[in-house]
Length: 173
Image (cartoon, rainbow, N blue to C red):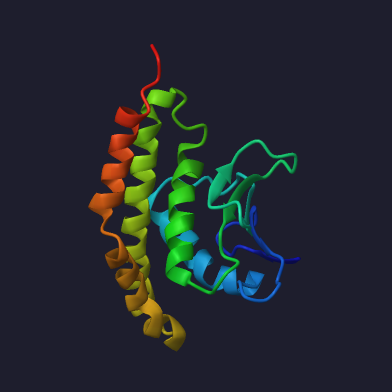
């Protein structure tokens, strides 16, 4: 397993299994560390909390109760190197990390999920602007891909699904 410590916080680490097809830890850090930098300048990310970002088929998901003492974010990055998808996933899960214990009442989880969805779209646009202004040729060439990913499924469709959730899944009083 490969591991890279974030340049944003020494408490945050990227781990991958480096088995072909997905990212190496260095690949993950290349894109996701920029998102962590941007996110930490726009939202209250606690840089002292331990965070481990790993790849896995179970993700994307944010896990708080782990035996590692780290909070865990699992991203589904194994199939291909799709940086826009990875930014979308991590921005969503970082919102849960910021909210920390989240909304405890099940009938209001839709609110947290809506914030996480909006965050994903907001930070895709932030990454596009950040990479477009980069000195790195690879980043400049890829910058528009973040915006193209936003166009794959307009936010209003995903957000409407979050808002419909409480109607379809009523919690008994």
